[in-house]
Length: 139
Image (cartoon, rainbow, N blue to C red; front, side, top):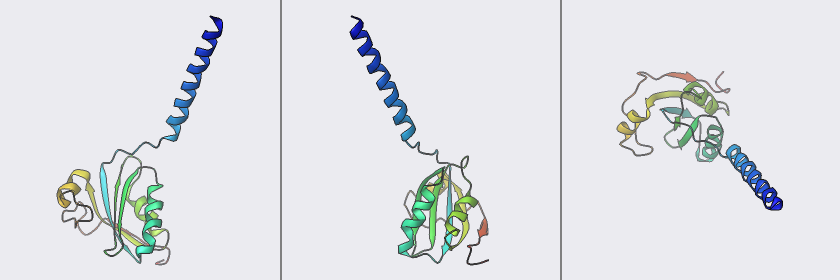
């Protein structure tokens, strides 16, 4: 009887420890509430993966779409964890000229693009752009 109780206790502790380990290993997806559209100069198709990786490593970034041909980077993010200026400077860091072209709510972005990735965004919350982040090459 005592042996069964000890085995059950050890199994229960093992399950709790494993659940704890899994809880720390799982990356919780950010709550997306904003979309920033960046206009980026100097990037090519070969740069896309590096830009995506740099942005996706940032806390609060949920998704990244890069269109090197159009010079556009679209990032969905949690505005409580990261700001559009940090996102733009992350892209500008490797030497690309990057500026915030549009800053939209997720709803407004969805309506403007009709749910299509890479579609041209017609509405803007930042008339004339939201500011420019210069790359290290532009200083």
